[in-house]
Image (cartoon, rainbow, N blue to C red; front, side, top):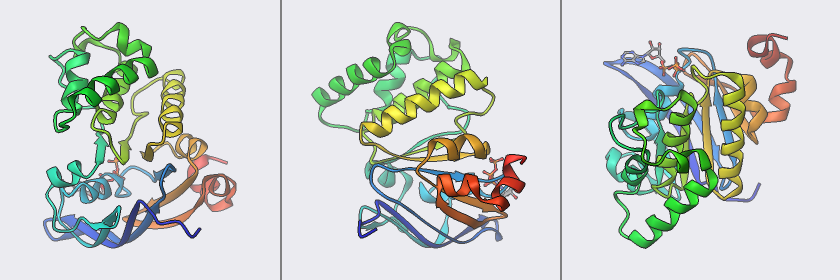
Length: 238
Ligand code: ATP
């Protein structure tokens, strides 16, 4: 309340080849928050992420740090610090862990800061430090997800958007990744967590937005959403 949002989306519409998918989407993300964007398969979450990173044309307004993103290219948006951890990780499989991380920082000019951040990533994720010379594609799914998040962090994001982090991973691995995300948030990075696993995302987030068929249908504090009978019935199997 009273604070300026880092990201403010208003009246956003987008679709594919004239077929509308998103309708009047509005959401806000405040600095240092973790916000969950949840909904079933096909609700439009990935489409929203594509619109935010300007990979898909849209109508309406997307303001990041006071700047309107509407007319920008994906590269310009990335340069402003809106960085995605894509669904399916999309690592450079035949490059080492370290080279993947360095790719995340390729746009940054302050190479000393990049080197410091690399050390920081290895301190945060000792598993990646041990495997820095290993080819990314030869690691486990959980390790690859860690690598994808670390690569995104190497870009020094102002907002890190994580798409379907838990997909295909064992619950114990997902729990570890949620702890990593919490540590990332404590370090001051703002996180938008996009998940089909509603329980998981709401349990880790400060606030949440629930999407159905291209619209935001519920929003609020994550703990209130978990207690909301409509959300429980539709998504939490209660
Ligand atoms: P998931 O988590 O399964 O990706 P989602 O909530 O991210 O689900 P979207 O992938 O954004 O949902 O899909 C929303 C709607 O847009 C769906 O009806 C889908 O069929 C449609 N859609 C997605 N991508 C395309 C595309 N490239 N061309 C046409 N329609 C698409």
